[in-house]
Image (cartoon, rainbow, N blue to C red; front, side, top):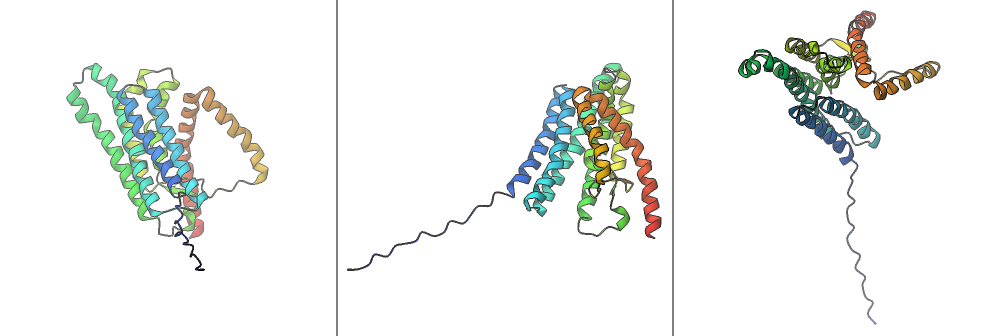
Amino acid sequence: MKQRRIKIPPKVPEINLRPLFPNAVTMLALAFGVSSINMALWGNWELAVAFIFGSMIFDFLDGKVARMLGVSSKFGAELDSLSDFVSFGVAPGVLAYLWSMKVSIFKGLSRADSVGVYWIFALFLAMCCATRLARFNSLLDEKQPSYWLHFFMGVPAPSGAGLALFPIILWKATNEWEGFRNPMFVGFFLCFSGVMMASRIPTLSLKHLHIPKEYSMVLLPLALFFIAGLFGAPWITLSLLGFGYILMIPVCIYYFLKFKREAS
């Protein structure tokens, strides 16, 4: 009798879906940033700001997910930069512009004058954010001196977006006092945020910060108190956080120069 040969089906190659997860998180960050513009067009300022902060959360998570799964890639880094440009360079400028124009247009300025003058601030923020992201990508493969270990070069894009939205946060924290809605005041913060993003001024980085165990029991109640503040009085908490971050900049410059002198 002839033995029948059993044909073994070819092995189906395994599909690795792990690289998709961090990119999906980055896409969520981008979706939140674009949705912020949509909320601003409808005049829903609270949700517009909330979407920007939601984009910050997903922007923080995508890198963590990529490193946890071991699937960091150049494609993911480029996608993250494009998402950051839209969510933290374009969306905050458009949001702040539309929010401040609701007042300035009704105070005697024509719409053409408003577009021509105050739109420059939103453009400036977007261009400075693009400059920062381009410099960040160009320095990825370069080894920085040791005194840069605990510092960013310039304000990170998410923090810059928070600075750009600081007038809106103050407006909500003070029961919508219209003084914070002055277009020149808003324009100042857009320019300040843009300059800080594009600059080489050292700002605080927590990436390599190691907290001793004896301090963790002290910091844990503070962290819980901050989280409770975000739920109980979000606008006041964010205002205090913004003031603290701005005051931290000269402190970072002082310690950076100190570490640089010690390294030299």
